[in-house]
Image 1: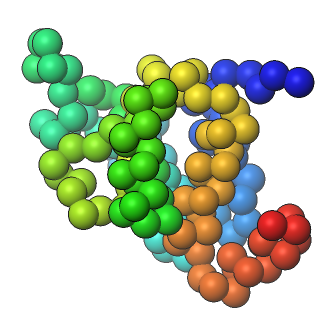
Image 2: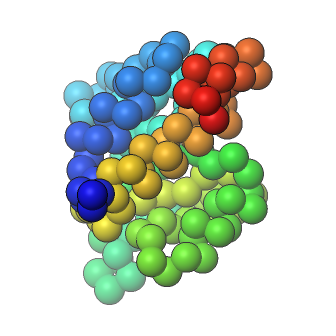
Length: 139
């Protein structure tokens, strides 16, 4: 069976479906939630910032999603893989996270996106919660 293209709604569904997740909503009226485990963010929808811009127009991207990674090495592997839409900016140098534009999320399959978000959750969860989740899912 072929995996369907990921959608932005999948980001929300997968993140919210993980245990012990809280959602922090911004007070600025935008729909840019921050998903957290134990008060640690693992996925968040960024506001437009000067570090992520269209190289042709200079316009700030307003649809960037930041996703934690297990390590800097994992981040670099995702960013280096030209078959994925992941990128980074100098602002995130040394930070274990990748960026992806919501407008390009469909370049990923839903299963791949699910695994990346689960890995983000695992990287931020307590050892006890991560171990319990892994055992429950036989991973």
